[in-house]
Image (cartoon, rainbow, N blue to C red; front, side):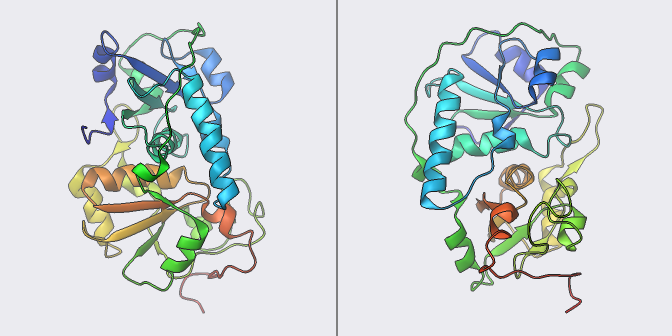
Length: 286
């Protein structure tokens, strides 16, 4: 299997001429209806779903997206290509879709680099026609990727300084001024997971003619080095609900960091349990 994760708009246009491709549009339904890539299926729940990492929560997550992706026409033989509006407007939601497929053990998945914006900037065709999709099925194998960290495992990492806990939320969340991107008091507590390092997720991208795109491998590693991450560092990423973290997951994996996992429940889950420790206030002010 290829390690390729990102596909450029012109590459996708060529691929659509022959190979078995399932296009997944993660944008809201209004954007999808206004225009999308021909054949694309709309699954906005990829972005909106809030997961809890209890045994029941993980089972529900698996069941929800196994049904959603199978309903989109994935059997395991097809290549899934996932896109959002652009790489910074959807908080990494296309990357979240990629991560969910990998969590389920689906091998053939790609992210449209630059998103729908890159597609239209290339003058490639769009449609408002909703495709008639034949549902298929594939067998989930969550153990295949071993990239999911649950809340108990995340708690255990606090005792291991060798594991980098990487917080990629926006700056107002990191400094404990806001609990989420959805409002300062969306969650009951503001702060950070103890011992976490911070690189705001935007720092792994740069401007281009097609909007934000991922930095080069060397540029990504230069950002990582600011908090001591090397290609051999074990890293667990978190954000608020696993979208921005998924964007970073792709950046680090593409750059060659060997052991990258994600705490998918992230701050939405951690902050709601008063028994879990947090760091509050401005970093270093205690």
